[in-house]
Length: 68
Image 1 (tube, rainbow, N blue to C red):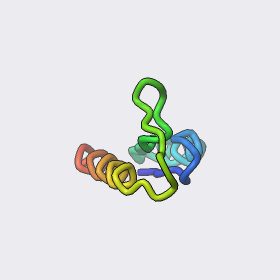
Image 2: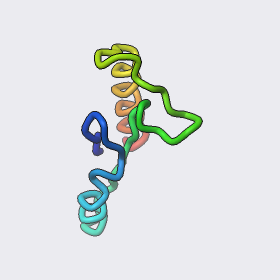
Image 3: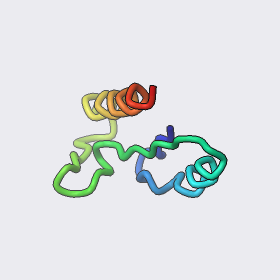
Image 4: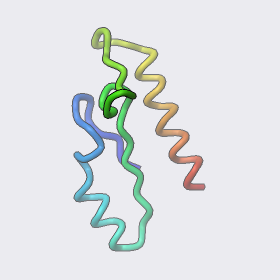
């Protein structure tokens, strides 16, 4: 599972995910709420927008549970 850097998006680790997939791994690339395509994007109101950071962690946890 790959989580991109703050201002990035899920394509940041696409090359690594493809490499791992060729070796047989399942890779999940997640866009955080502020990096999602429109109309699903939720802009950060300020740098410390706690609710969006919590939502990002929940998204990552859901992706992990779906893979188990």
